[in-house]
Image (cartoon, rainbow, N blue to C red):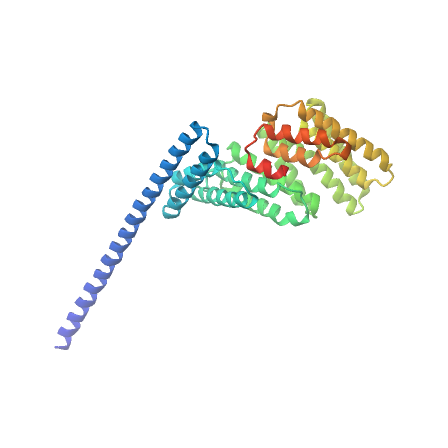
Length: 361
């Protein structure tokens, strides 16, 4: 009788466990189906908002257009939360977010946060895709370098370096995006060298990264120009260590590289701005220079830079060049009109770009 009862109990337990498994599977399937259908509804609403947006734009209602795009992005975001492994859906959400136009600094900050979240997640889903990793790094780098680089910026720059280094180990070495990632590691490390002490090994690797990136893509101007800054930062580090001979060698190399680049492209706005910044850095460190002479040369340099800006089609100015020029085009009060004209010209190439508008104030 005991054996019989034991058999009955075993069968009962087995049936109970099987029933629970079936029940859990059923509930999971139902939840998945419910989420899937719910995501489909969100997508349908988003598509309807986008269609409405195009109609509003055709009618000349720009405010209505951007509001409908914002609502579409919100619906795609809800769909992404329900289908977080759907790369195609996430890319659609990212693309729609990029079409929105925030009207305040807080809205712009929220937009950047959402874009970073989506871009990082897509990159994690495809860890062997160098282009996706590059897009992630570019967004982070743009955000970090939007303002002045100070000691407070160093942890964020170091995080860029720490993010790229392990990624390079698993990305295809012959992919152009991989070489560009090396360039960004060199850029971040060079900026760190300007605000903190970096080891000899890290400094040397930064220069190798920049040179490798330029060799792979000679149009990667930012990496090429950063070589000038690298020599300047290296000179500064040597001065702090009282290694004056080495500091002078690096300063001479910086001047040599900058002159070669300027001779090859004399009207390059970024190089002109970089030349002016280099002169200012030298003037600050050389207390023997006449302050009045320095002020006069800086004023003349900024006026010349402003006139070059006005002579350059604004469509040729990307956001990084825009930030460089904006940070370096402030002039004395007597040139206020020229300053305002310069800023308006820079903005005219992309007047609806919220990042430029907010940076310009």
